[in-house]
Image 1 (spheres, one colour):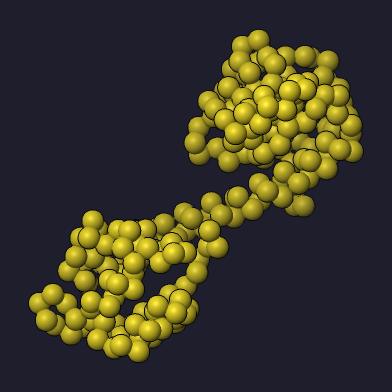
Image 2 (image 1 turned 90 degrees about the horizontal axis):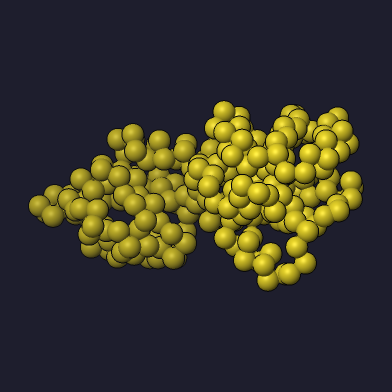
Length: 228
């Protein structure tokens, strides 16, 4: 691990905060506060890998706090609770998109294990997020025709050069099977068969037939950029 895990711990019980900071300060970089509102302000100016938030607080519950976070916050959310009603916990986790909950009183080794697992999830999500923005920039700014498809083969999006090449509009291709789109335009039947098989392609020569009956020579590549 190249950096200390950064944790924000919010709990209206100052004794809990002081104890947590004293026990774990050598392991993690920790900020603590007794106020959920103060926690929201801290998040505006700091980035935390993990948010530990007590469920029962006077100004708002832990779940309410999580639902107030900006959508671009991808810190891992952990709820600390003394609740014993499992149905309440399940509803809370679903409502606040919470990674895990920890019962009070917690044990040192068990909470460290949860924090380690949560940080692993954080790193995975960060890599996904970085990949998303990298591909989004390429998709938006590239002069190459690019289309994105789901696992089922439906077109999710297509950039302007792609729409221009096929003389079509975004509304005409979104949610359509990409093999159907190409079947109308690609002149080689064997390539259509390869497309339908789901084969990964790299710079394969194709000829497109445009709406004005022009033949356009292109190279096509199909790559899986994210398993999801």
